[in-house]
Length: 279
Image 1 (cartoon, rainbow, N blue to C red):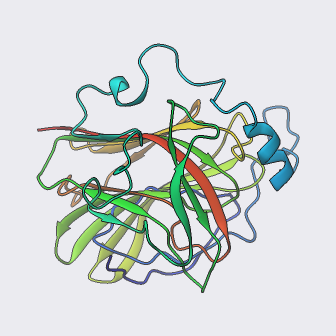
Image 2: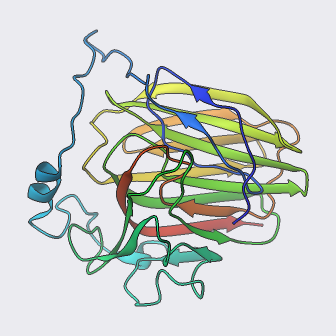
């Protein structure tokens, strides 16, 4: 994977990222993130995720909040790409465009503990960090679309960036749609523009989640639409809509999952990843 350098982002909200870069290194400082007030005016209490709490919550195995009806990729029959991690090759480059399955800075493997669709999910545990570290799976779909939607179920165990959706307009112009999670239920969704290594943020919005995101499954979906030009992120029951820049083109989308340019250890579990496109 090829990376480029972006400016440090310091925000007063927690972050998760869905990104549309032609290959970029995102350096994000989440140390000062704090959530917005709740509806009653009180700030949500800080969330502390411990190994004991995670392990206790995972004892039951399957996710009690998993959707009823079809499971796995049967939920997305029209997807251009879908993986529910049921096959031994689910983490390989035969399934993904690139894979960090054999990385030495952490563990990327299959787990049967606390999944959305039995029997497996993908588990990421980034343990060795050097400034801006990754542990990822990436799928690229060549072509231009009128609509691109990426969906996944995410169980993140700490504040940070865990997945990106990418669009490469030209070799020197790309865009990222980024969702960032942090403490106190805060979330930020923003558009990042990379013009030959010069990064700008044409649009962005802070919001709050109805539940604490850490240590629980949340459905995440990001949709980019050419006309009207907009991007929509849905995290659990929270939906954020942003306008897209006039030079944003839905070309060569890619979806990347796993810890993204993290400056500290980060782990999480992902299940049922699907990319749907419309011509």
